[in-house]
Each structure stands twice: as structure tokens, then as C-alpha cells.
Amino acid sequence: MAKQTRERFPVQAGIGEDPKGSPAEAPEGRPGGSQEGRLREGPEVSPEEELEDRIRRFVPWNEQEQADKAVILDKIAGEPDIFFRSNLAMHMSASAWVVNKSRDKVLMAYHNIYDSWSWLGGHADGDRNLLAVALREVREESGIENIRPVTEDIFSLEILTVEGHEKRGAYVSSHLHLNVTYLLEADDRAAVRVKEDENSGVAWFGLREAVEASSEPWFQRRVYGKLNEKLKNTIAK
View 1 (cartoon, rainbow, N blue to C red):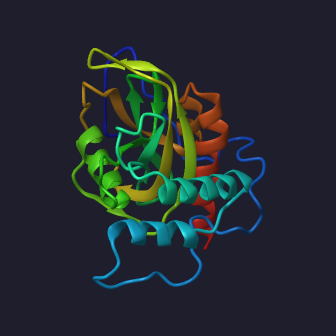
View 2 (tube, helix red, strand yellow):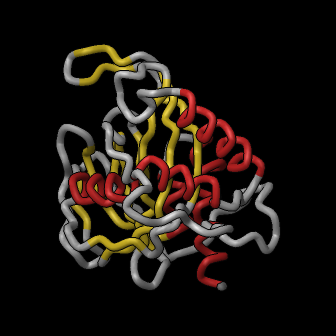
View 3 (tube, rainbow, N blue to C red):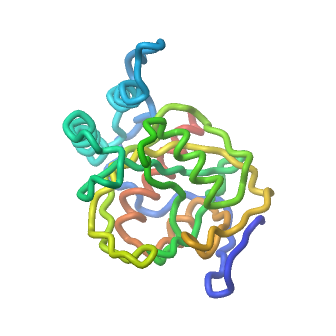
């Protein structure tokens, strides 16, 4: 198993399983990361309009995604700096649920700020192509270069709370991430490395172990468990 960690963060071994009890409200038979309607295309469509189209076409998996989708669309339309961290209250971000080819492992990083194993991703920082943001962040945070999207469609939507913290010597106030998640694939045999200013470990986990490795109960229940259920549904299709 490809991994790089510091000794205080041992990697849990395990095979891919579905997390127990997650998610409680996922509707039976709902496709994971499905879309409806046609996407506007052509040179006259701006990257922001294309993203907004993709979010509108996204079919929510559960009540959380339905509610968060409405808020995200409202803020994209009403907040002119929503793609920049200069919006101190909330801004767009992109995350990735990175799986291996056999879909039984997930790539996680030990996040320094959150002090937990977590998914990979980062801020939009002005980029409206959030799939490109997710791909870039995975490469930067894991050292794996050969990453590909399983699909370019949005896999999941979340509004995430970020507690106040210090970063590079300055205090960052509590705020929200309006987050778009993509399903990506990488080779679980590829070499990985840490990005010391952001994480202290990078490793592959079995699906159930990835959820259990997180020390954030809300993420375990509302995000990672949900993503595994959607992954299982995608495989079944």
C-alpha cells in the first residue's frame, strides 16, 4: 500500500467496506452524482455560467444536498466575490473523493488544521473550473500526478463550517466553504508524499476505514459515509 506518514499517525489497514449507519437519509435507488437536463455549451458560456449550470443540473442525493444546493446557487448569484477568500464569511471550494481502480480504497490526508484524516481539496481562489481545482489540489497535497475524473459531473455538494484557526501566523475567522465534490481516480500503487504546510500524512484506506479514520463525527456521518454510499450506487450502475 502506497503511503507516507509521520510516525504519530499510523495508517489503518483494511479492505473496502461500507461505513456502518451512513448515511441515514439516503433515498433508495437514487443515483450518486447524477445530472438532469442539458448543459449549455459554446464560447459564449462563461466558466461561471457553466458551473452554475452543472450545479442546477445536479440531482441531490438527500435532503442535505437539496438544501445546500439551493444556498450555493443563491450565493453564486448574489455574492460577487464568492470565488475568492476575500469574502471572509463564505467562499467556494472544491474537494475530491479519490478512489482506486477497483473502487475499494480512498485516498486521505492527515490535515494539520483539522487534526484529522480527511479528503483532499482546497479553495477556488478565483478559478471557476472547480474540477480543475480539485485535480490540482489532489496533485499538490498527495504528490500523485496521474489523477483522472471518473466523471466530469459533480459528485456531491456540501456547505462546510470551518472553525477559526491560525494559518501562516495570521488568524482566520470562522467561515463557510460552499463546496463542490468530484469523484476522481488514482493508482493506489503510486508513490505519495506529504505537503508539510498542509498535511502530515497521505495514505489509502479501505472505504469503511476511511470513515473511521476521521476524528470529525459530522464529516463521518454527513460527508464521508454519504460519499461511500454514492460510490456503491455508482458501482452498481
